[in-house]
Image (cartoon, rainbow, N blue to C red; front, side):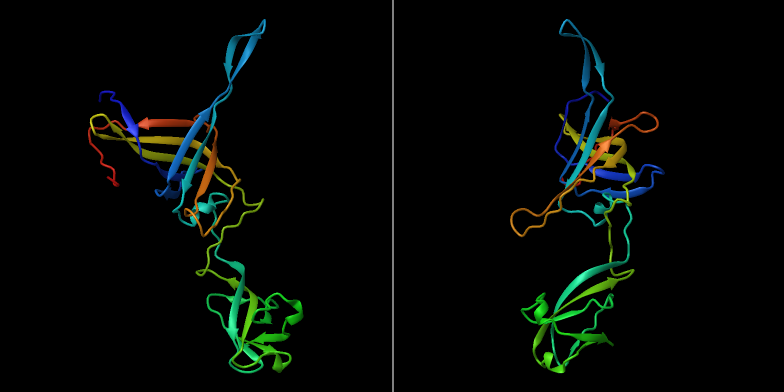
Length: 257
């Protein structure tokens, strides 16, 4: 195939695999921006104040993926890749008293942690002086003083809900759950001057996530985005990054036109 000029205007799809055994971790094709960069700074031997001999420092680099649309598993790259199936979360509810002296409090998809229920008149949530004393059993909260819960009135309730397998997915970030190293292949299409699309693939042989990230949620402006950045180092064979042009006589048309 002749070497024809090409250009790119298409984000990469990312195939992320666990480095140790090449087991697929995540195929990610909804990124908005993907980048790969390498660097190897020069150092110099000087003679009479001038550069005389140049040496290259070892090659290193980074790779990043920025997305607004992504699966929950995307976050697991920042931890050890494990998604847990149990969790405990703080819940808040406004409940109407239907029978004086008690509140109905039955939940689905989890259980209420013992000793975690706190009841207040509506509008007084968190005000310790307004807290209503009582006990919880058989899906209802019973006030110690029945007059504290008035029929047809609303009350704010806070409690801890323990969710179990099938009802929750959880990713934990801590200093015990360390990220894995990954083998990442990013594929895209270049268009040549004859109108043919040619596959390109950028491979990072050993990519380690940077565990520095800011989560942001806002109700104004553009939808939230997240950027994951990986440090690139050499694998056991000395490889850091490679770029492949897939030379084939078959023209490939991009799915997005």
